[in-house]
Length: 167
Image 1 (cartoon, rainbow, N blue to C red):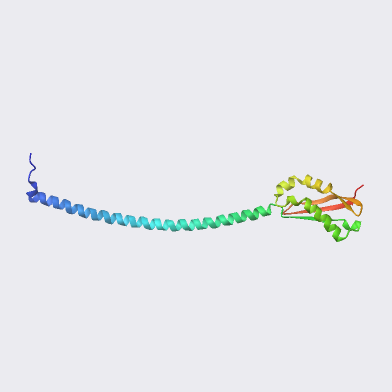
Image 2: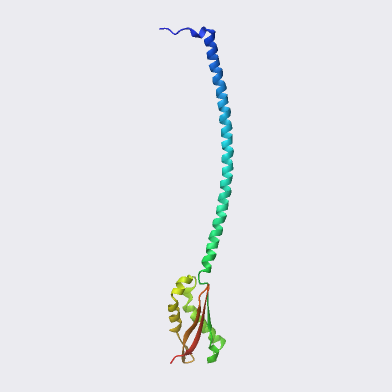
C-alpha cells in the first residue's frame, strides 16, 4: 500500500498552503479577540475592586457609627447616676453635713443600680422602696427612719425621701 503522490500536484499544494495561511490568520484573529476581551475583563475587574474597596470603607464607617450609636443608646437606657434629696431635714434642725451623710448612705445602699437598665430597675421599684424605708439612722441617740416620697426613673434615678422619728 502506497500513499498517493498528491503533494506534487499544484492544486493540492495551493490547498495546503491556503490551509496553513488560514490557520495562521485565524490564530492571529483569535489572539486579537482574546486580548481585547481580556483587557475589557481586566478593566471591569479593576473597577469592581475599586467599588468593593469603597463599599468596604463605607461599611466600616457605618459599622463604627452603628456601634457608637448603640453604645450611646445603651448609655441612655441605663441608670447613670443616683440623686437623693432629703425634703424635711431642716424640720429636725439637721445641718447640711448631716443631711449629706444621710443622702450618701442611701446612695451607697442603691449603688448596685448604677449601670442597670431602666426596665429592670422599674420592675424592682418595691425593693428599692423597702431598702430605703427599712434603713434606720441613729443620730445623737435618737432613731429615725426614712419614707420614700418620690421616685423618678430616667438615666438619673431621682429619689425624694422624708425622715421621721422611729416610734
